[in-house]
Length: 211
Image 1 (cartoon, rainbow, N blue to C red):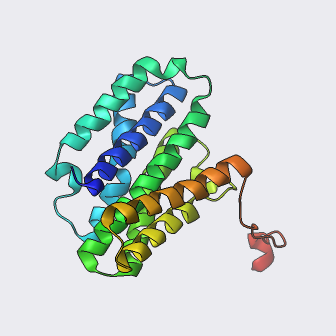
Image 2: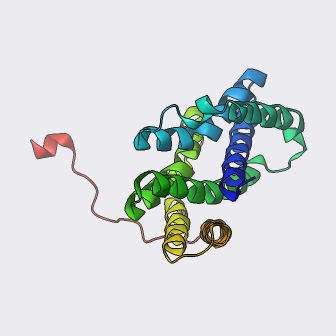
């Protein structure tokens, strides 16, 4: 099986697991588990395919992705109670999914357009959109709004993969470097709290003060 196909399956499965873990934290039923797993697992890739104009989107062309999401959801439904800290597991699995999907999204963007810029953006969108959807649907604190680096990790992994590919690196090597880069940045952010300096200004004025 080609390395990019492995990354695609891995990204879907891991993100599906984070969706199912989020469902367990909300104590949803089995259908809720499967729904959140599918939305989280396929959300980023769906957004990528819509942006690239790919039709049909990947899970319509290959319904096996939906079966993977459902299988992961069922497995998590029966095992989530064994995990001491489900939110900690969720954010670390999200980091793994982000790393795989950053490279996969960049590879698809590069293949579809030939543009390094578009490839980096599609990698970033693919890696982050599913997790954002998961958090919005479950009312969890969004990973996007957490202080530590998140989107930048996907951006770094995508950029390194694209750069290595353009320099002639073999696909396996470029993919490995991209995945490791994204995970190192996101993992470091989770472990050590890496973050950029936030915007600070005077408080916004009240609407009546502006009129």
